[in-house]
Length: 267
Image (cartoon, rainbow, N blue to C red; front, side, top):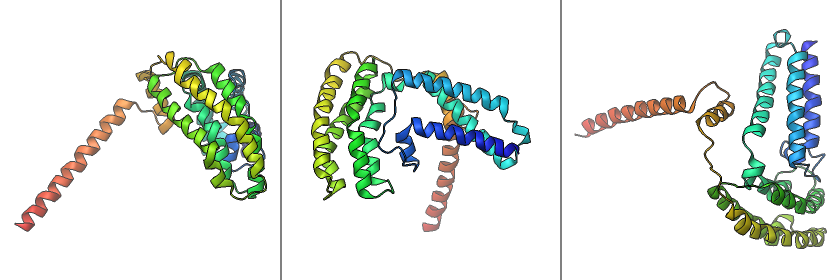
């Protein structure tokens, strides 16, 4: 019964998450929302983070870890870890404010993935692509509204990436759609989108570059915490480095011994 309650709790959370994050849903193989991009404005992201905090609290209060079967306990640990990580990242790593690359994922990846990874019929994918393309000017408007002072190296990377985005909608997308009956609709959607992308390119190269004074370093404390989430272990960067150096010296020592043996055998 406890396992059933946990799985029901998680299913309800997942359903709501997929609905709110349609691009991620597409990547996970759920194609119900392939014609949508979702709302990732500052207000919507803050609302989602607050909801995740509430979910984590309800999860703690309502699900008894000790009463779960061992497989369900593992799922419990994974789910809790993911919630804690998403909340921490949202509150400590301001990607949408300081990293323009956060928007490139939507400007090209949300469309490209439908044409290369979706299991839906090709024409249905193209129809969904057109729907998403028509929403991309809103992504650009949100980027211009939200971006503050990114680190210059990060901005330079984004500038190069956006040039690739423009090229994709100028010509690359047609290699993927082929001789589709919807090709002219794609061309019209691209023709409407490209002026926004070119204006955005100018914004990146001028206005945003002038205030690209942010520091790409997050500091040791934040880096250690981010690393702990990434590897799902209570470790620090110094400990990882020490272990890597130890392993490097062990391997090189073994290689030296083998090389000495080979040299002796040859002489």
